[in-house]
Image (cartoon, rainbow, N blue to C red; front, side, top):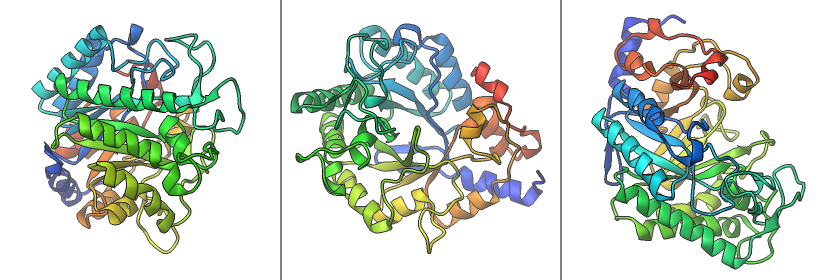
Length: 375
């Protein structure tokens, strides 16, 4: 990759601009994308987790979005090594993480997560808990051993998200991100492929948004008015990369409008390659369309700084470094507001410092061996 001095200086200038998310001022435009690690035995984030996030904040990441953390519902997860956002010991560990990130000059939000029908019978941390979802259907169309959620189930999960958000504010986090992407529970309600309900929570696009909007509203009511609520969503799903919530901007607007009205302060639009247009007739990507349709700040993500999407990375493929001039062009014209970086930051905790410090020549191709350390 060749980067001129002028383009490097441009990167530093554009990415260094602060941005407001409700009452939070993020010091620059670089976000650490959420990436599941399974480095928290018993669901408790330890000193290695604290160091992992603090190192990246110290190197210039403006906003850290943590790996997905399970809310306090027994069916929320499938591993005893993924951190939880409930329980005294777990929250004490997270409080130390937030403190360390703040001491390093960054801001941090936890990603609150319920996996829904992705869960398999017998999975930890609660082996007897069933998989639950809107219709008891998995992303691949099979029914498995899960069950369709009753109103009691819906209310319990809404309460669990609200309680986790309140805990986040209480222990010193700067906001929360609700995981509504990639075929997990909230996304299972948003997508017609997994939501076949005939009650108020199923049917057209607006009805399928009802459950997620109720979670947003409950969170909004539980936290302070200026406490940021971010909502992450995607078109693609695990096991269904070509799935789409919306085929047109009008369909997307029908989904996003109730979420914005319920209290979402910013949207995190997850794509595999940020540079691809979302709909025909426009160069806007998913984050760009989201900002245009809702007026809310947006975070883009998808193979930033690398030539090759993360799916191939998990299959063992590396990826060469890619320039970010296209990304900077889009930021300059306000297509989106922040840029989430995944694999590049996973491999190199100093990635933000190198980009902000005009040290592009020090960037290295992605090596899948980075997945074995995650330090």
